[in-house]
Image 1: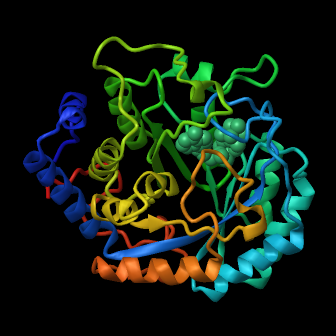
Image 2 (image 1 turned 45 degrees about the horizontal axis):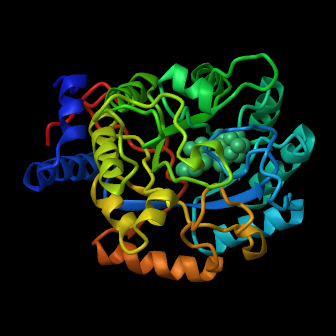
Length: 363
Ligand code: SAM
Ligand code: SF4
């Protein structure tokens, strides 16, 4: 069967009829079940530093935000958080941070080596656009996966909202390709509803997910942060009438569902940003409309509110224990179960006759 065309995707992205959308949710959910099953894989998220050299126009950690107290976790604190992940039965720990060169190559390599030698965890890194020598060293230390969202495939918009460091342009797509060559499982993703983002560009983003054959795809709403240029209502490219994609939960569900149809075997999280704009049941709806992963926050509570990429983040005060209990209940309530093992895409059994990424299941 052939992949959905961009025109068809655009039709779904603009769809508002609940009965028609119910069909999209049904197809995404059936495709998710068929390709990745009913397990929900949990990845413990540890936000290891909020220092950042970048000036992203959307993010509260941007270097220009002088009102934010900065922290960098100690190696022992990171290891303690990883042990929490083991205690809760998670298969992966995700170490995320701003682009912080205070996190040195060898220091992080040692942290990764310790986690890999003393726990059964997969280690995912999400540390921004680090030079190749760092990536190679961390892969050699045992890191399994790397997450780097391209945020939007619209080059002009990306260059405005994610200015270069010095005069070198950022090419996150090229970096994703190099990460794969270095042997990482590779994840990327987008924000939905960035000021200046059009429906057509979100359809292009989803087509690019397929083209890049990504292992993991994170999709969350853009959430305005008052201490950023985009938080003041500014738009670099005010779209013509009706073309601006809204940053609401319905748009995120549509993008998640279409992504599941286009990349049937990818790991797709129900993101914290989605849980933030619908604290009641955003995660559950994400999991029922294509997602199969959730990333509970294991950052020590004393640091959590300082990792303020956007305001009013979900789960900002709960301890790892509280988060874990709450998630198990929510996952069981929707008839799913918590996945065991590391839950990487490469570990999954290949279903005969289905070549990953090449087939689109009209379930
Ligand atoms: N510094 C690394 C990077 O930029 O890839 C990793 C950390 S960064 C905080 C992780 C993700 O947060 C970004 O890729 C972006 O999609 C998301 N993010 C940042 N600001 C956001 C906002 N205002 N609303 C929604 N998501 C946001
Ligand atoms: Fe830094 Fe990442 Fe935030 Fe950009 S999105 S300011 S690189 S933490």
